[in-house]
Length: 192
Figure 1 (tube, one colour):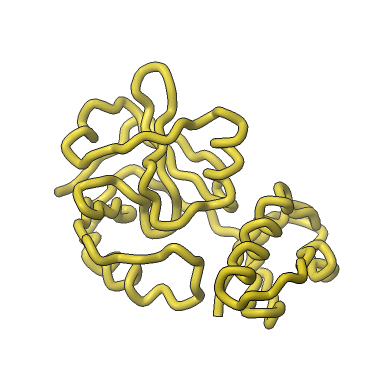
Figure 2: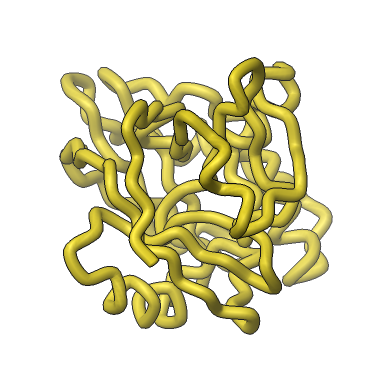
């Protein structure tokens, strides 16, 4: 089973086209289906007031949809976790391997995963780093997130190979996903 997570704001899902694109590409690759699903047809019960996390669970077809009130979280510290075998190319509902790494975060707000010497993602988001004149996002994400993809297409972030030993040269960090959009952390801390 796979998962697509959308943000619902007062009954509307912003950037729905990116979620449709990823969901249908995943279905085509994993299940060899050619038909297209439009998530808009399945979101008719979206709450009309407030901000919600919408979890769409699917395989070849949509299996289940649930709405959970969105809870904001703060992020500032990240525990560096090295795992050269982690694989999360598709957004599976089973996050066992990611959850195993999150248990190592100690007092940090989240983890920053390094694979084969390169920066990938946190446990819940893609990342970007400010190099004093542009935002760089790793060319090596575990999951190509919908917000990351949108910001790449809008030229707001640029792909770059970012090695673990280069992290100290950046003045800001941002995490990005459908729920938090582009969350800038001016004073981020990395724990090794």
